[in-house]
Length: 435
Ligand SMILES: *Cc1c(COP(=O)(O)O)cnc(C)c1O
Image (tube, rainbow, N blue to C red; front, side):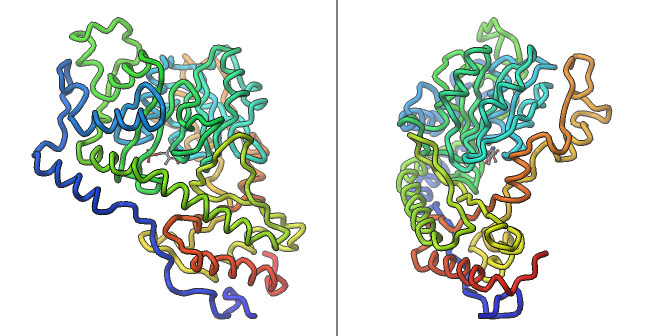
């Protein structure tokens, strides 16, 4: 059978159905807010409305209940939630924050915004989260905390990372953008560290267009996040706040419209996650006949939420490179509705290791003179050279591939087409010249 990359017929042409989670309930909720005429009720001063309007407060209450935590604080993105978290833990300019290089860029820029320096530790070979020994090896007298990511929906190694944090007096900030509904020992991802952050952007399991939620059991951290979210500097005097560290605020407020949508979305999370997990099982079961492909490992005692579904490819067994194989599979498959310009939702690796981005390679963040990396208040030495995190680089450039064909919008027969494409290319791989 001639492969599509060599001019053969593709396995499928009709686009896959898109992941659409917004329905009647959300429409009704948004209309309720529109009818009220109040699309946001915040005031940036010490007043009853400092904490926002009714939808925002209800979303926060319902989110906290669902995730089993004292405080949920809505913000306008996970990015701004991470910024709030780094500010709230009292980060000083010139301190260091240990971060993963294999994540969305904001997990690391959260440190830079407070003039702290991101220090990259390596990831786990099996789970892709920060590797505890590598984290410990990067700790210095300047380390303030660890921003740990539940990458792809895999909860981080809570016990080891928290033991290290306790031993060295560090904060654990958990980026759970990809892990709503994931669990470690029956506790929700996002609630495993001192402070956690979720994303409600359009690509995530549930969304409000844009949005984020910060969660914590710590009353003091929660209040500092609320201040940073809403013009802290104008509020602290009237509120009689004693601790003025990082009380330069922003406007990270979520509107009533998004909050109303978010309240409907939480109710859908469980069902959407179950459908996703079922599709992942089906795909793994049916790809077992391809010896060069290894399905993801799930950490002991954990529920994975599979934001993407990551696999490893063994090019020695295959006799062709990962790129050759994956590009040939992609050529057999269509795009997905609502993501038309993304091509088939299948890719080699995830994101380029962050320290290889120009921001770190050129060490230019604020202004043109290398601030804060080269600022006099930074007494350490940055290290962003290629080869810094060998496991991350090997996964990204050689072994890992990930796909999103497990989205709940995919029927079994849609998935069967994906599986056929993987087998077609596998069985005809002799047709591929190894590039
Ligand atoms: C999506 C994502 C973010 C950023 O979320 P926004 O809500 O778009 O700011 C941060 N970290 C990770 C790991 C993400 O996947």
